[in-house]
Image (cartoon, rainbow over all chains, first blue to last red; front, side, top):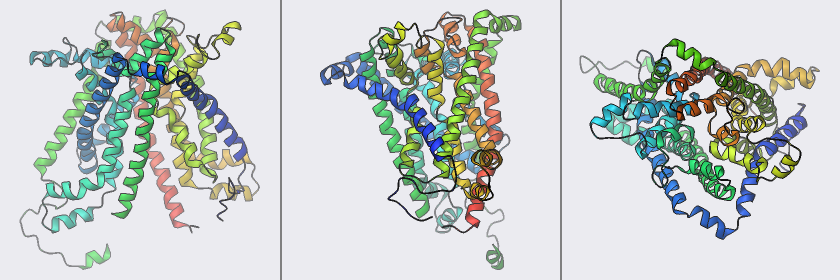
Length: 281
Length: 302
């Protein structure tokens, strides 16, 4: 391969570049870029004053705050338990491990409406888990706790699936070295293993957070949807649309999109960083 | 390994040596127990609950709930939507992967990121963008109305929203696999006189078939189960624009919980089939990928 950087594309004997590239760009533009661009244009057509008025409305601010708080809480829970699950799946042997490993993807595969109604039924005051929690005075369904439970369910695979390869890539030699230098297991984990997996952990956390901010189906049933109290940002978009308030819906959506793109960008940076980290260690 | 074997091993100091790179058995089982407890509570209990709730009213009621006309219409619409969206996105995914994996060009990274874009867009926003374009107050709304065409609150809107959310699945699965496999085999076929389609059908497709199937399975699962995006564009017209997930929502909100879970159980079965196929295919794709990497590391690298 000769480096011909001045050209847009390097020459190749293989056919089909024009056809496949043309198809890809046309389809991508029509289906994704133009519709997303329309959203941006619509929001920019509002003017700054109107946009600010739409996104600083107390009900909108409350929904952002709730979405962010519950998504952060759920991502934190998933960081802890996702690390535990990934660790157990990579490091230990136990009966049924392959089945458990496959089950981790259930939240990806189960349609969100199904998880929504199921979690609501389980955690309602009359449900299997809800009734039991009600006795100790904790109500989950129709509160922010319920929203967090739904987001924990949805976000778990992101953390586990990001951590598994990072844990598999750890070299046993570093642990042996730590042990031979007198470190106990906890010290080895904290000082040797954790520093090399934490970029992956952070990336998984960010992915779970991004998913949690935009999640709709699994949350609408369990949240109760009370304005100012349990109304998440995506739900507010839907109710604005139902009142034909397109501008208001757009404004909320643009902020939500900006947040998820910022997260996407940081995930890319983190993953590049963790890859470099693994090469240098 | 042979060098290590030559070094005589030190005699164990204790009767039962503890391996330095694992935890004591008690800690191990405690961690396994905690992990399984968490997964049991968050994954297994909900899954079991779906099926138990579905058959709560007896099998007769279950059968009636999934065969009544509105449910049948919802099942039909879901199948049709997937039948359109999955093949279209499969063709696109293969084309995109061919362009990205088999050629070197500028802006490849940007293109790959753009293809992944729909994954990071909230489902509700995915529906919203089409309402803005085709809805009553949307850009093309007046024109569509003048020509008596309906996209929003009609089947075309549902198909568009489903296309949008399932857009990256096949491409994202194929790109890394085809990049790892390189271009040597296709180039050899070319030199031996094969045409473009011949190369694709005879050389490339057999190499990527498991990865392709994997992407299709995931896209299909999402296409049949999508809720948020479809909910925004559908208008919830029973018997006409209700997909299965939307039908579940309507039944649930009408306090017809058993019927809601009956239809939900069908979607849960779909999820289980998807998971089973996924774990079988995952293994095959990992094998193909490992073979490709081994091949390329053996050969001379430019």
